[in-house]
Length: 206
Image (cartoon, rainbow, N blue to C red):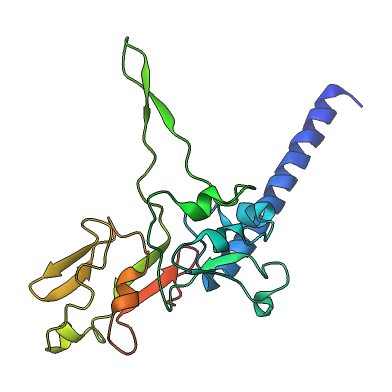
């Protein structure tokens, strides 16, 4: 076989492998619409390949808001960690104990990138302060201040400056800042909760 044919088959094999990976990634992302992963989780397919179901991140969470997915979600994802946004939320701990407990690096802090500063050399730039966990929005049909009575239950609950803002007595989520930690949902007194969360992999509300 001449070199040109070998090169052709190598390219074809590479494209086929890439297609398989892209399809698998899409399938896992679609399934991941049913849960929210812990902070700094890798993309779903990478996360599943790395996670050993060791429970280290679950045990390390000081607020007990991580839990293992049940077998009803599928044997391949059973016992992998997810974030409880129905009864709690991520407190965005400063030292990220769940992430540092993850030895296989299924949860992984972003690397510090080096930025050139000119002739003087380079300095490291800090990683993003908070990870994006989910999308959040306020359902104004259920939020009490939008119906007339004052509330303010969620005031002071948000750990991210600028994410939960107020128009007079009405709360509003600014998605340019919100990371979807769910803490405003946890303190909402409306029934059902006026704060809707949806996975980064889906538009389905949780």
